[in-house]
Image (cartoon, rainbow, N blue to C red; front, side):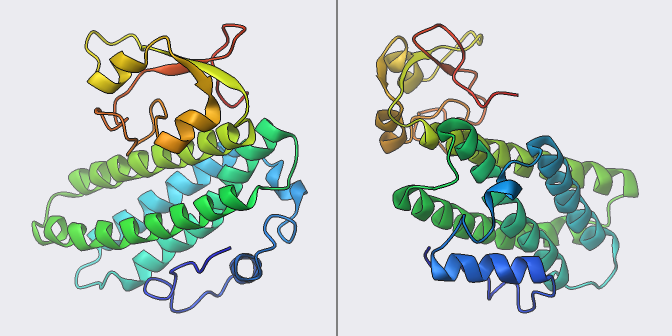
Length: 236
């Protein structure tokens, strides 16, 4: 795996599990070092824990007068490093039935983790302005919950992408969602049938935040369907 940019956010990694995971990334032996048994964990529990940790890091920073963001960025960055590989791995395992991740997909995961760590840094930079407003506690709680919801949805997208990459040779048909209006990309894709790898190569992934569709996937309700008419999604 490529280098994960943890130095700026994580000067100290006290958790042995994180250190071992980073070592696995550096040696390029993920997921075998982490273990397939871990990848068979409960994604719902991983998501809940991740969301709680993001919300907690944001709220603790906002409510502590004079606190610098470094420690809270560290907490959120650690949450990314722990949750993303498991979210992707559980999805990939559900799709492929194997814990062996294709090197190209492994590189995608590394890049995605790096990007999210950058997002965490930007998050706390932006939170400075909110902190300076000295809002009432209820508003600060609401802000932390809103941010956590967004990060949890991104984790869902990583989980779903893992599943899709695990079934990249399967055929899928694009179907429009229930909304009244659709972006140009989604409207053009409606009814098209391609291998999942075709969609992945173009970053046309329904509901994925930051997708290459005109709507950006942020509020996209579209879906892929299998040839059996089932929704193409991680089971469970």
